[in-house]
Amino acid sequence: MTGFTLDDLERNLSARAQAAPEESYTARLVADPQRAAKKLGEEAVEAVIAGATGDRAALVSESADVLYHLMALLAARGVPLAEVMAELKARTGRSGLAEKAARTAEGVRAPREDTSAQGGRP
Image 1: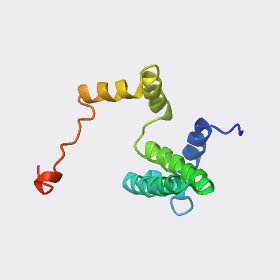
Image 2 (image 1 turned 30 degrees about the vertical axis):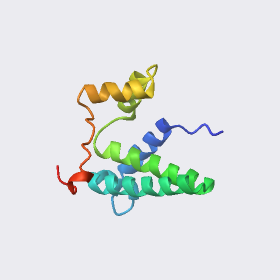
Image 3 (image 1 turned 90 degrees about the vertical axis):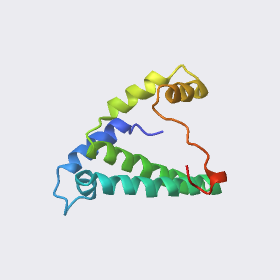
Image 4 (image 1 turned 90 degrees about the horizontal axis):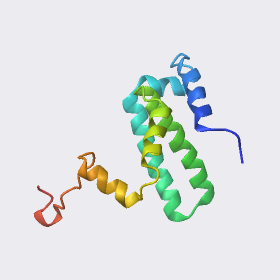
């Protein structure tokens, strides 16, 4: 097991974001939140595929890409890792099903209406 943490990644990203965008991929991502979001989505899809196909090495590699790009997006939008960790901590001690139900009840994430029987129209 490595001693490298998400806090370490956040510090590295912050330092690299200070470089000129022409010289740093991280700086380019942090300067362009839409690009960072797009890359996160691409990497997430690749991680999903690796997980679905059972390719362990690819899942490890793609998961690292997902974490890196998520952290870059957070930095681009000025969201510190500590804020995300506080949200996770607040959810601890509650079952996943109860937590999801509470978010829906609070209006954070309303369930989608199934429109498939209506030809895709609400």
